[in-house]
Length: 114
Image (cartoon, rainbow, N blue to C red; front, side):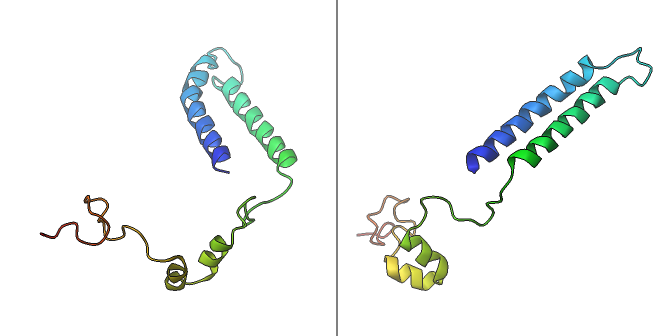
């Protein structure tokens, strides 16, 4: 899902870079309908193609469905139990007081004098 979203965002960025260039290339000073009619027809065609792709390719919905390979009992317990109960089942969290970031040994004595 994340890869698909990343590809869509990248395509949008490439399109936002190319759109002004296409607008200038497709501008016609001598058109009877209008100067920007070629560009607007191209945009309309791309919108119609997008609608056809969405209608034909997206035939099922996976919103709120579990991902494949994520059927782990620990994950299910963490979702269904409150935070305190889930933490007591998995044990204490390591480095929660910032000891590891300060170079300590993890026993809470990082900033204390010996």
